[in-house]
Length: 228
Image (cartoon, rainbow, N blue to C red; front, top):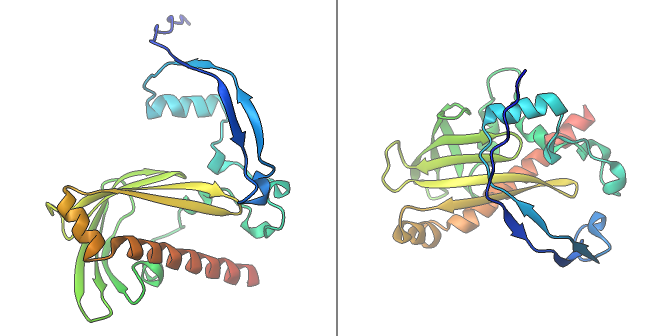
């Protein structure tokens, strides 16, 4: 087997420095806050394909942080049944997804959801109607553009396929103490569309309420599973 020489890449130098590592004001496993020094290092950008990364994982058995088992000693007081890798969020069901789950948490307070079709794969679509507390119906459409278990989901969201005012959102998932932290970043096609979403439709408050509904629903499902 003949190995080729690695390419010569332009490298950038990152200077060393000091920082405060940890926190005394958040989760217990982050304490105590203390000063550390990181030495300088160099880094070179390069493109890695999915096939190359898969070969690396197969050769080394590498696990991402979200796939690694959690050590109870790092999360004092956390229920043992909650100490599961964040990748569990992406574990597929043995059969078709029960769409009734979506209606239990999707949408702001007072809204309900009726799903017409749902396919959770890249290029798949979710067609649904949101029913407002005042009786107004809102046709909605989502297409998944990226699904990277267990860390990231990207999507396009509009009123229908081809909607010129559709926007792009990226959701990231990361361990956060004994929970999973979800962050959502959205890019709108214009400032006017963004302002309308925020001011007229209260998108920020609605997103916070939706994620709150999801947290409550998952907590209840976990409790019921533990009891059974």
